[in-house]
Length: 174
Image 1 (cartoon, rainbow, N blue to C red):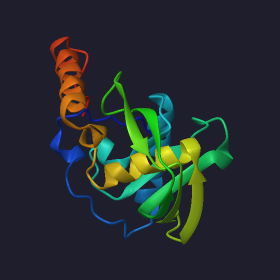
Image 2 (cartoon, rainbow, N blue to C red):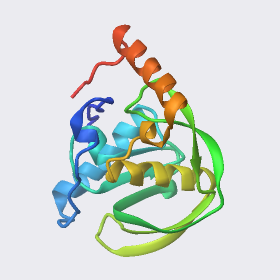
Image 3 (cartoon, rainbow, N blue to C red):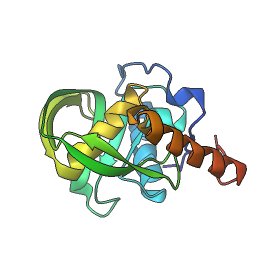
């Protein structure tokens, strides 16, 4: 396993189109382990392949941040098929290090995705798991937290982004 460099906002790979996962062989298994390991090290609750410069439709989620092997979720080629409820929730992103904002997310959802072996499955998620799954699926669709913000809130958030850049806090490690 390896800790991979996480891209920061401004890198075009974060918003690029992502290819579907078709080969579930050893290379993908290694990438999945690297995504988990990188996410735990950051630390974060999830990590999508585009955040490490690999434009594939795969992401990992682990609300336990490495403490519970049963909490690990692999999302290959995911699609959210049902949502219910709405809540305004504080959210951060490893590609916007140190910044948080409030975003409206569903309180529950049903997702269809392939697991690490390529088997399709559906599962329901609520609360923090639903929020994290939505966030990672957004990454696979080239959508970042800043895209959820409107007018004044977006301008204020982008000012904070620029301030972080000027202070030299944000530097892409990729």
